[in-house]
Amino acid sequence: MEGHKHFSHPHTLSFHQNLEGTQLTCTGCNFPCTDTAVYVCHACHNFFLHDQCFDATRSLIHPSHPDHPLSLFPSPTYTSGSFVCNSCNEAGSGFSFACSACEFDLHIHCAYNNLNPKRISNPPPNQIILKSHPNHPLKYLPKPHYGIWGSRLCDVCGTYCDPKGELYHCDICDYDAHVTCTNLQETVRRGDHEHTLSLLHVNPNPSFECDVCRGTIAQNHSMYHCASGCDYGMHVKCVSRQVSDQAPMGEITFDLDMSRLLNKMRELLQSYWAPAVIMVSVAIVILVIINSYYRNDYYSNRYYRNRYHRNG
Image 1 (cartoon, rainbow, N blue to C red):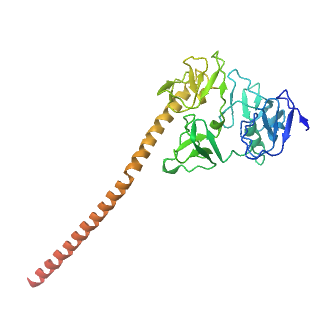
Image 2: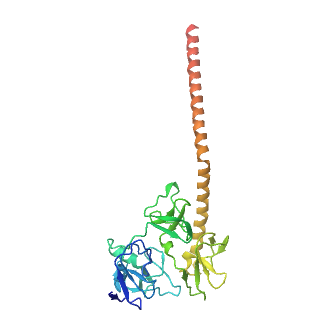
Image 3: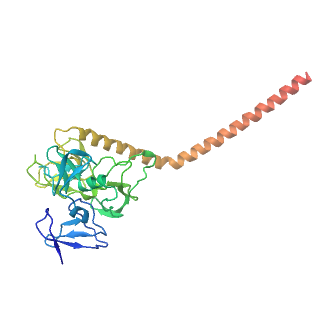
């Protein structure tokens, strides 16, 4: 079996043409490697690369940042262990094209999607099981239907889903997840905290204050928590943010409050929908009867008035 070397990994990689029915995650872009060719490290058993990630150029001039060349980095250069993509504004922890002079970063798939729309990352699998929602599979919706409410909240990170973006959805529980939130790292590091942070797929606390944005982390949402026992934790979206940045607190707290309000309104509408329809229908019938009665009474009185005047 022919071996292949990649600058991001010390071991030789093997090329596999087909992996039917197997769910693997590309180390480079953090997207699933379902039913596609990949490069595999048999020594590590957990290192996989799409062919696009394997063949990615080491340097490029990107139209979104034309002043400086972007270099391909196998991992984020920041002490937090992650970066925020300047194209999609989502956090990343794998390969990135970065400008060391400007702190400009792009996911590898975002960089290539903008350069060549025909050369896109492998699509997400049609169905997945999340540890945060293990009872039912989530279905991939490339163009979700948002109904009359016009918005959905990601039940993993607690922020709104893009109305024009893709997501995963559970029809049974009305559970939603950003595609990027289905591939969160199990552990992360921050430069301002000495211990490793572990991913809690389901926050068990009725209320927990994020140590970065000071907003509330809702129960049952995912969060990162200190693995060494410190009472230290944060929203999954706050891992790469600075503590001094106060914007996320308002954004996440407002999203959470609005989501609760919308969910309550949905419940009330569903609970009273049938009785409301019946009441409106009855009211319409009553109005029709009353209108018919008064119209008949009006014409009857008019007839007798006209007859009286003629006889008089």
